[in-house]
Amino acid sequence: MIHDGNLFFVIFILASYIIKPSSSCPFLIPKWTISINNQLDDDVVVHIVSTDHDLGNHTITSGSDYQWTFCEKIFATSHFHGYFWKGKKQQSLALADRKIMDLCRSEYSIGSVCYWVVMSDEFYVSPTNEPFPSGWEKKKSW
Ligand SMILES: *[C@@H]1O[C@H](CO)[C@@H](O)[C@H](O)[C@H]1NC(C)=O
Image (tube, rainbow, N blue to C red; front, side, top):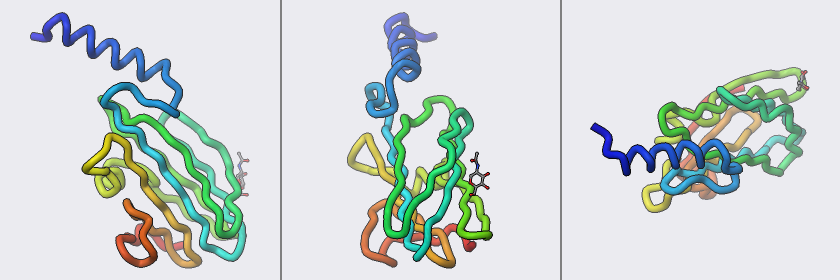
C-alpha cells in the first residue's frame, strides 16, 4: 500500500519532472551533462536524438565542445544516441544509456557529467575528463 503522503510526493516529483526546465532537476533527480569534445583536425557534425527529444544537427569545430543537460528518467532509462559525420564517414553510437550512465555516475553528488571525445579513429568516454588515456574507455571506431 502506498501511504497518502508518499503518493502525494510521487505525484509532486512527476509533476515537477514535466514542468521544470532541464537546467534544474526536481529534488533527488540526478541531473546529467553530456559533453562531446572534437579532437579531429576538422569539423564533426553530430545529430543527437533521444527517445523523446531531437536535439538536431550540431557542428563541433576542431578542439571545441558541444554539451547538453537532462534530468534522469525515474521509471525508464534515458537514452541519447549520436549520429556523427566527419567528411563522408558516418558512425553512430549511444552517448547516454544505462551502461554509460553507470560508468559516468558520480558517487558523491546528485549530478553527473559524462565526457566524450571524438578522435580520428575512435570514440572514447570518461567520467573524469583526465588527460588522455587515464580513465578513458574506447566505445567505437569510425
Ligand atoms: C545533418 O547533417 C548531416 C551531415 O552533414 C546531413 O547529411 C543531414 O541531412 C543533416 N540533417 C538535418 C536534419 O539537417
